[in-house]
Image (cartoon, rainbow, N blue to C red; front, side, top):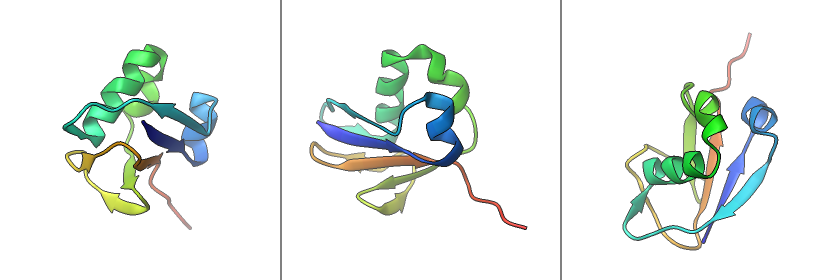
Length: 81
């Protein structure tokens, strides 16, 4: 199982701040996204936007490996003025 966290506007769009899902080996962040969309296809719009990813609090790309027990976070890019 992995813990998936959602931050900022993404949390509001999805109506959730976290979810726990099973992960099959080998898996990547992209696989986690696909698993989330399989659980709730209505999230497609939110996940089609520009997004940043972190595994165990380290910024990663979509092809980064994910293992059972990991924490995967999704959040929109932060902009400032």
